[in-house]
Image (cartoon, rainbow, N blue to C red):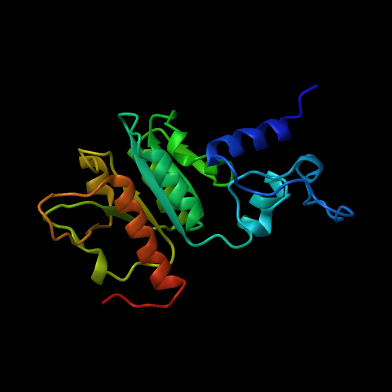
Length: 220
């Protein structure tokens, strides 16, 4: 009988690429509920930091939950945007509290590189449903896009608790989301193109939050 945990670990190792991770545990096995017997026996080839080697997926998520940051990330999904997986991967790297998919429930997970296993992802069928949730949670909705009324991300003091919202690659934020956002921020650019890739914009905005609230660097 196939072990689901072993299958999940094998899938994650395949996504991570060759020659990563560690082999079987050497010496007496450690004690504790966080350890995965299959990984201890056969090795851990997942794309996780060393501190989580040989841990079960559930134990990793539980540990991350004790220290997730105060910002959420939302992505509009009306055209099955291929960038969503990359946004989820970055949200995991910066330890966002949750990722919210607004629009279609199905999204392309390939770019997430299985990090969605460790990141809470919530679906909202419409902008109205999403903004009602944010209002109930007391979370400001902050759009990231280039609009005439956008303020500069670099000089904006991001609140500790908020939702950073990103639109589709190409059309950007929908008119409904733009109208619902309490503020819309743009990223300073200096070349010939009018916009940067949606997943790149998400990484810049999340890192701006980290600089402000993890490293205590006020906006310039």
